[in-house]
Length: 502
Image 1 (tube, rainbow, N blue to C red):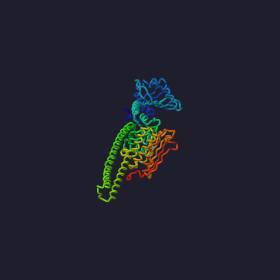
Image 2 (image 1 turned 135 degrees about the vertical axis):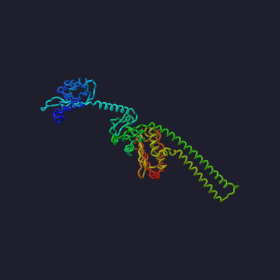
Image 3 (image 1 turned 90 degrees about the horizontal axis):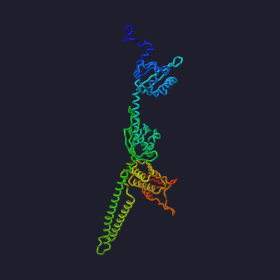
Image 4 (image 1 turned 30 degrees about the horizontal axis):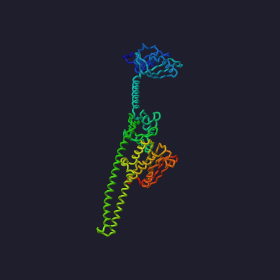
């Protein structure tokens, strides 16, 4: 270690400022720091410049700094353009490829500062270069990974997209366009409730979905969703919470799969099972009616025959007063009439259709959704079902009647409505009543034909009034102001709700 004449190390405060700066700059190895004259020739060189660019000072001082630029960039005059911009603006910063002495390239961050004297005359430039090749390599690797992931996501058939914590869409894959119909530019930034039917929005299903995902980390469900064109499809939905490095919620990842075909297959299987069960039930009902008629009426006829024989035969003495025997005959005849009436009622019930098994399996509202979806598939009508009666427990008679009313109304729309493409069904319950409204957008249901017409008249709606009357309600069947079918009915809530539903 060097020392002064007194044996002490030289102190930094005893060195001139110019020498301090020179020592500092020459010692820095992470940055190439050097000066250029006004024409761009290199005037100084530090250790960092030698490490980064590969030239020793004696090899490079006096040469033009364009030697560090790739040939194509130097050929179009970019080094001179950088100096011009630094002179005009005072400072110029850029990133790009540069060349070392051995010809290898590196990614550089470059800052060029114009140096002027007291009179403002340009004296030259200070140039600082950082080697950012590693950062550039990492960024490029990340970009490639993201591009591969994007292509992978776009190749997936399912809809995969991100939401921010408030539910706005922040990313969109090709599968989402195929499933939901929106292009990214149309939907990014909009709230994801756009994919939900109006009844789901009214019941705040989208908000509950995100709250449940945030609370549980991941949820999975199935339900109806809407495409851009307004058509419904049955979807399997998975929502996963996404958290930042500090544990904060940053959004949600959502995967939506169209399971309409799978659902249709399940419905076909269910419909087949349902038809078999109904047919089996019908057969059992027929056998029961036959047994009742055979056993009860047979016994009653035998007893009646004996009573009549006792009354008309002189050889058979009467055990009691003749008036008592006549009363016994009358009672036998009354019992037989009741048995016949009961059998007739059973036959009428069988002909009208038994209580659908789907009601026992699902309950009224899910059964109506099943019925509506079945009509959608068979008729291609756009049918919407809106209800606020999720918490109403309908009794057996009411659920059967309401199911049959909707079924008969839809059947008549399909068979008789002119050019109908959409049907709206509402089941709205208040504290006092439950009201059903069914409307289509056709030009009206065909009426009974005149002598010049051969079109059939609606059938089945006659039973609607009887069903509503049995529930103690009122019904109106007719046409809308602009044409189309309209059915509205109102029944007392206490007549349709289970007494212990509360």
